[in-house]
Length: 169
Image 1 (cartoon, rainbow, N blue to C red):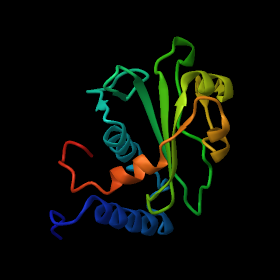
Image 2 (cartoon, rainbow, N blue to C red):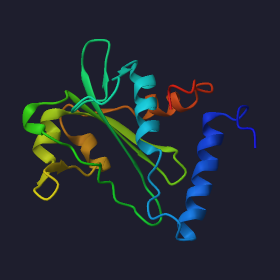
Image 3 (tube, rainbow, N blue to C red):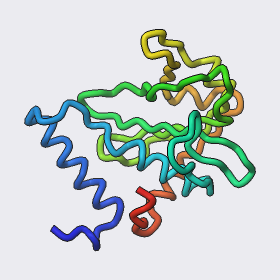
């Protein structure tokens, strides 16, 4: 199968179909990939940020004004409807300025997205000793918190850009 002529959206739809089939067959247990990389790409496109090269402790991208963004995505599925984002580490050291969070439906279509200030994450996140990290549930109610910015439309617009270069995803 030649995938060169498929759009990002078509490739993601195909991926989701394959992941669901593999899960039903018991081949895999998780259906959450490639959520992290795709989320980082969309957020960077949407807010004109530059993705950090390599592994940067605490942030994934930097905005034109120097704002450091930690980027988290969550794919909701029939098997797992939790909006808990992956581990947030070392919050006490102020590792980022804004958390960019995106929730997708089971087909990786954007449901909602926000920029959440670090102080909100620190206040609402819960420390988990067994992972030495904080967890945060990204529910729609977070839009009511002071300083939270709804970027859902920006993220949706970023999904409609033309086929990406291989270095983006």
